[in-house]
Image 1: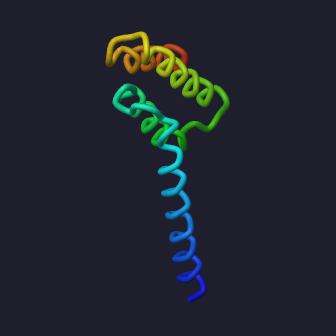
Image 2: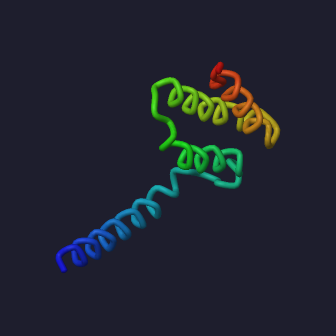
Length: 97
């Protein structure tokens, strides 16, 4: 019974807290259509890949790829930042067997 209440209260508190943070913080993002999928895809990909990043080298490669994508977004045509970061991650992340 305690677990039920603790979970329910936790969900209620954090749901409302992060809804408030999203509503207040959304103004600082600017125009989301200017970022497009070239910014959303690397962020979502990092969320999926992060559990597999177990050592310092793989984390450094992933963070470098994200930084490169964010640098290229304003200056490169759509799609190029994603392709460039994938190529760079493959080159530096390739393990010799």
